[in-house]
Image 1 (cartoon, rainbow, N blue to C red):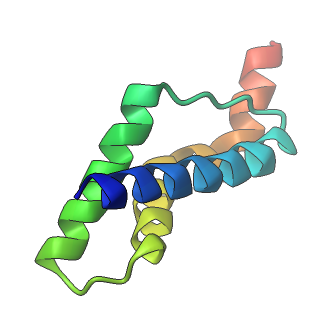
Image 2: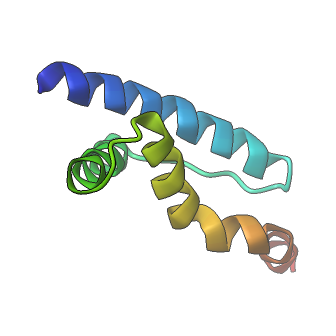
Length: 83
C-alpha cells in the first residue's frame, strides 16, 4: 500500500505541475501544498478502489474536476486581479 501511495503522490505531483504550467500561460500562478497533493492522491486511490481501476488517469480526472472552474475562468480572474 505504501508503494502505491508513493507512486500515486509522485504522479499527482507531475500532473499538477503540468496543470500549473498550463494555467501559467493564462497568467495564473497555482500552488499546491503537500497535504493537498496527498489528499488528491488519496481521493484518486479511493475512487479506483470503488470503481474501475484506471490508474493514473483517475488522477487527471480528479485534478481536472478540482481545477475546472479556475481553468475556464482564468482570463477573467487575471483581468480582475489587474484592476
